[in-house]
Length: 626
Picture 1: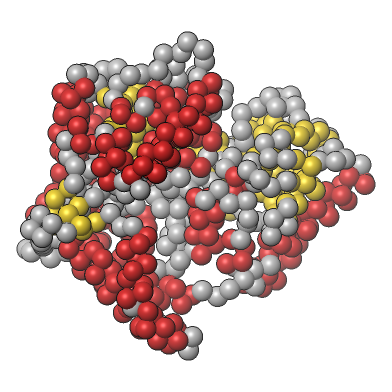
Picture 2: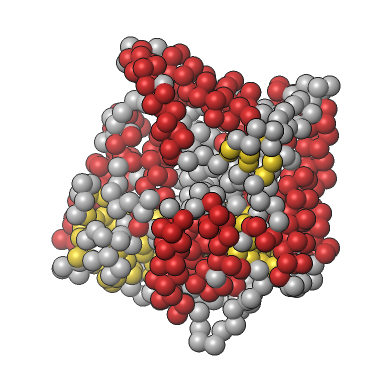
């Protein structure tokens, strides 16, 4: 196995070498060690008293457990068919305790068992050493490291392994000790940090508590959970409502799937999953309820409520003390300390996802797990709403326009207004599946040429995913993604799929009186781009929302599909300033059919299908009319 893993890593380096051309000739690549601060639960533990492996789940572990419960599984599934979810919930709940019970903590937040991390020192934490020693079973964020390795080598990537159960103050202390050890081991004075999710929260806490040491050369926080995790409030609320459609799209995105199956989830009633999840919460709470990190994850607007309901003021006094300190003394200083570090010369940047509901049902604009607000500090409209036409951003920012094309994010209030990038439809912890965001991360981490969101037109502050699962990506020739400026040129439509051939069938506009003309034979192989000619006049108005929809046929099991992207017109006098929020997402078909019939179609998973047919019909009607 070790030889196979080593061979795979070597091949990755060789095959990835073609991407080196992404940097300009002669451009200096940082030789500082890269410290990987991975996402939640991406650490590996053993029981020091028994020597047994405790955490770092493999598919074989889960598979063997399923086999050991095979009889009970059959009985539980049989009960589920007649509406009894108790058996399956009890079975899964006991499996949670079997798999993770030794990770439980005492009421004061200390570990119940003598749990130790496998590797804590720099020399043992090099990615190449971990791969060789553990056969690839304890490597974190594999795709991100494979992206960086061709430039700096796996020997120069150091994987931080923290006790993620502890609160952020403890995790940041562990990170500080690790960074100091990496500097001693390598002889370097500074490190480059790339962090993911919980790792971003740990990195931000590190800057607050230890940023004065000036150890950071560059730090890229991807989808960071700085302000907590929205799904946590949902999970502990006792009112879980799983977004099956969002979960399925998450899976499609994570596996670069050309096949669009998420619409099937809307055709089935899977409410019983919510009931099962609610019954699993007490089991999970037995394991994680006394983890300090869970309480630091609690979003600020629900922290006090959760604390009063679930923590005992006497037994849990130490957890409360530490988490209060995080929420009220550490987290509020993040923006200030980020900027202090930048003044010392550290390049700190954030890459965040947006445009998705929370998978557990929270009506919050997020990347599926972390709210966009929590990740960035930006002002964000509620899910399903946007800022009104003519919206004026909260902070002036030297006259720079900081509102997203979808008019849902106001970056002027972000922790780092000029150094935060937002990607619509990029899911949590999955920037590696979006080529634009992955290359941005690489540029920010390893070079010093990108100073802010205005440095390189290839990386505007607001963009949207071009992952294979999105099928098509489109923008105007002469405008930033999502914006329609003066003389925008043609609409460029690209096939993002890795294997599927796409035939474009329609391009329509909602919110403005202009349209497009597709070439007669708009068939795109993977990676190919076609131009759609603008028909009619672009309205001479600014700060006005417009939706553009591209419909297509695709040679997979899902033959038809469409993607709608929100654009902002920036072509003249600004619309009159509006206040509050405006409902967003009502399609032209929805306005025609009305709420009741639209609801009927959505209930049976047919709304998207009819919407696409309607858009195709509308395109050809306008084409014939003009």
